[in-house]
Length: 220
Figure (tube, rainbow, N blue to C red):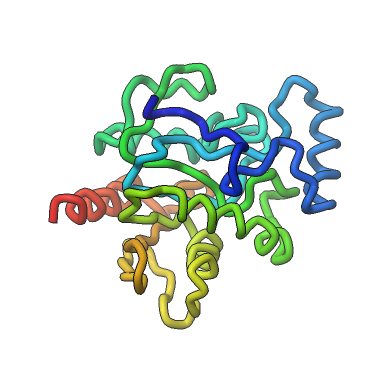
């Protein structure tokens, strides 16, 4: 199905109990004790294995993807992201913030630069580097990939690192388009977090503008 959550059966998807980052493992264990019914693990990618668009976020939110087991599901950022994807025909069904809501992605996949929830939503540089191999493999295993959308600067930097490209040559800016040598096109957006929208740094119209650009890219 087009909306499948990826399974940890390849280098692109860590096992739920991934133990690479001790601090994240400890935080995950704390969450499991507090909330034993939550997912509490490395969150797999969600969407179409044949998608032309890959959306890269930062990391699972504690009460969002870490709770539900699906990227951006159960928090405000997911409300805006999946509403926008639906509006631009990258999704089918009704998003209801549950992993069993029947919601499907079309021609795209959503993943995170860091797969396990970090304390205060702030992964360390070492944790970001440790998770990079999963992003590299995820990119390489999408045979029709044409566009990567980075939500926020950390996701942008992680995508560049996955391609071994210098950050200074591809400066992050909202709604900026970058042609990566020998690879897909990279688009940037401010992260669709509640903080960014509440402060006015990112409006719904600004976010939709990025997807207008992506749709235009596909129609070229």
